[in-house]
Amino acid sequence: MGKFIVIEGMDGSGKSTQTKKLNEYLNKHGYKVKTFHFPSGEGFYGNIVNRFLRGDYGRAEDVDPYFAAFVFAGDRKEMSDTVNGWLEEYDIVLMDRYTFSNIAYQCAKIDSVKEQKKLRDWIFTLEFDIFNIPKPDMSIFLGVPMSFVKHQLGRERVGEERDYLNGKADIHEKDMSLQYRVGEQYRIMCSERDEMVMMDCTNDQGHMLNGDRIHKNIIKLLKEKEII
View 1: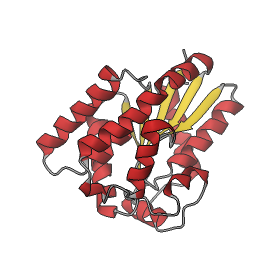
View 2 (view 1 turned 180 degrees about the vertical axis):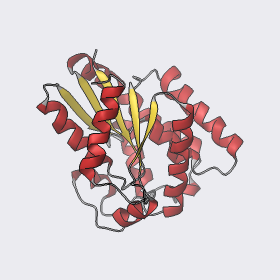
View 3 (view 1 turned 90 degrees about the horizontal axis):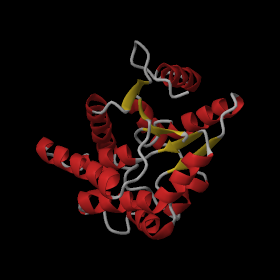
């Protein structure tokens, strides 16, 4: 059975870059690797997710977070047999976003700390106990400065993985206050869950580290945890 690694973070935090760098490193060192990005953008639930992120159902705050969480979870459920097959075939399955992303984004839309915890627990139960999707061996949250996220989201973002938008803006990406609250939710999970680890991507002055330095720190972490 292969190891299951997830890279998590706010939009524009460099997840895709670090996933690519880690994939290249692992392949270079003899690992057979499968990479994937959630949401899948395909299937019954994936298409609903696409419509949600395009704003077809309204603004992010207009959609009940339990409904949104269920749809994102359904996307993973629909892919779970495929992911289990990858874990049998590959040494490492490397994922850009997974369950913790669902929790961070949906809980960030709730003000009450008590209700946030209630929804976190509900999503964990739904995804891992009821839907019984594969559990990652480690999820790494990229803790980057908000100034970096703001800069990245202010740039034009292109690529095939953005075809789901059909030229529209992602309702999560354009809300910087939401991004800040998402970061806070990730930090809460890093303090509560052993399988969720924060990778500090800042230097002593609080500025963003370069991508190569972050990559080296990720490799060091994975070795320390005996994932690779």
